[in-house]
Length: 407
Ligand code: HEM
Image (cartoon, rainbow, N blue to C red):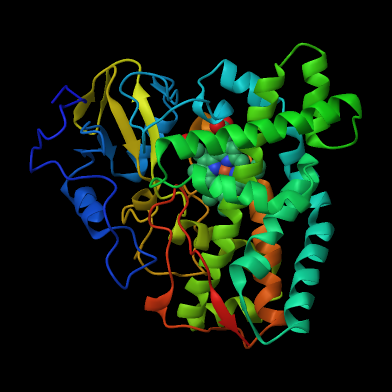
């Protein structure tokens, strides 16, 4: 099959629609139909909202091979790119660019995310986490964990790192929520992105005039030196602000729910003093939950032979890392949450040149959260039935809208 674009309505029943629904009552597992595609073969075809039929790379090994292949592009503007939803207007910085421009821009912001710099932030993150838990314990013995804890932790951290006023969190959280939802109208998504770029652009103006010791001021210096336009700097700020809080917030809340539903695993985490065991638990939760469940999206620049098929130049490819992380050839008994396993090979942060820039920060934040929250509130429990919890099925990032907890 060589064509990736079909007229709408020209459906071939054998090509399943993507994304696929999760099974009712199994909020932590990838959709069963997706797992079936993995069993059927390494390279499958799926149908998207616009009728196009990109390839689906179902196996872990092929996923890593493809994501590391310079013959595939992350450039959303290329014909054949398998967009998750209609695209309009502004772009989304270097996550949707190819090298060399991708690498040039990414290099400008790598320094604050190195392990050494991130470790230096650990005491401050611990203070943030302890302060929010103090606030929870000082109030009534129940809360929405998303609003009281999961969203503020990474938002406060990324605001501090970038130099964005946390007081504006209602504004940026609301707009980023619209932006990353597949069900938002294209115009609303474009407006949300423009709002965020406008906001970051104003902040950049201030940072250029009065630079301080934060990431946006560093970008302002590069704008002054002619290395980056102000618009590019603002778009990069939007990418870092959104990636910095949406992802980790969902890992905190969904991870907590998964642990509450697996009390034996929660006990293991609560009872350990070993930082290595906590770090291992974070990797396993990243593997098991794989919150970036929309798949990595790419388009082939040249013909690529893989998995017994040839992906033709111009054809779209989706790399669903959620089933990559459940590949039985790589992870034994992959559907079991097992905090004791070595899950470090997971692809929850992607792979190749676009592999998550913020992963040292995300890991450190999750290690602090998971080693503190359940120890300080040992009686934490879900204050609703599991089937009453509302999940973000339509977002680029999976998680829960709210998590009612009590203690
Ligand atoms: C648990 C939390 C996180 C998860 C699961 C996650 C996941 C991912 C994934 C899968 C990608 C690859 C995208 C692709 O290949 O198309 C990515 C890229 C990226 N992430 Fe994260 N991320 C997390 C936290 C963060 C944080 C805290 C930041 C900090 C700002 C961040 C910044 C970025 C950036 C800038 C990219 C683009 C990298 C590039 O294109 O070179 N992420 N992330």
